[in-house]
Image (cartoon, rainbow, N blue to C red; front, side, top):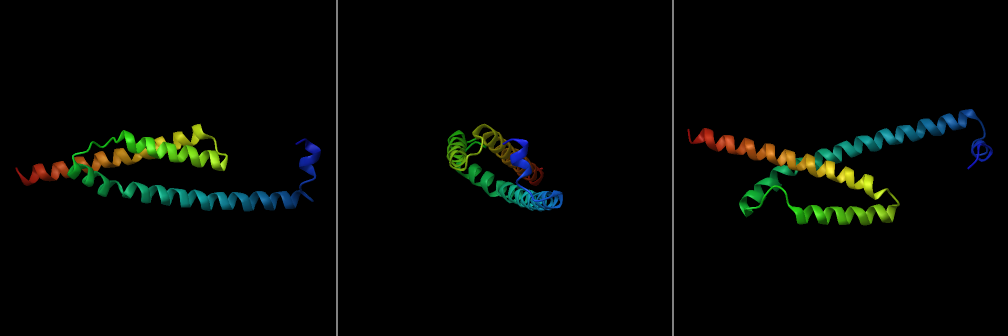
Length: 117
């Protein structure tokens, strides 16, 4: 698009300002939703790590991470989102979850040690 085409999108400066304000407000709402979803996702770490302990599994589950990345790559393709960036975001989310699982496991082990001392 050239500048003339962009200028023809809005009737006046006030309309452009209103669209900018409305769009930014919606982005703020989505950001809040994303943070709440990340918190909810991370809160599942406790049940996940306890199940892994019971099943004799390691915190890092390569096959699960591969499944998540395959699913996300497909979604990225379907929604025309940069796969690499979305993959980086998923890496951050899985790191957040694994770190929380490690913290929970360490807390649990300290509780056991305190009970036996």
